[in-house]
Image (cartoon, helix red, strand yellow):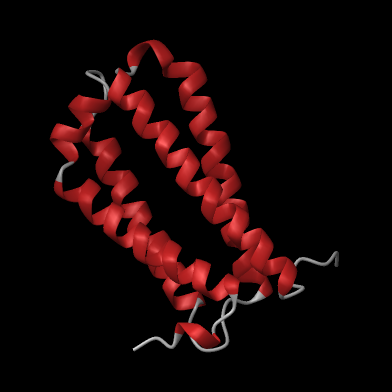
Length: 136
């Protein structure tokens, strides 16, 4: 189906991010009410549903961008910017809602941040190898 041996690091990273985002988004949609209760007693399941739906869109974007020759420079910049915004947003949530989060909620946010940081690292490395991030 996918001949991964001929794909670039950036392309493989986009495929992995796309697949992981689709799986995570589906899981969030399927388990929104109990997951919201685990993260914080004050968190509405609608927030988890919105996050899950957003991850489905994010995953589809990555899989579409990874087709054929791989992601364009624009798709790569959008993806890297999105990963950076995820990190900033996660830090903002940790700083502003720390007392409202459960230990499990804190752990889930930190684990997600580590996962996104990994994808970000490989996207930046792959973009550098493909020379997609040169100044305009």
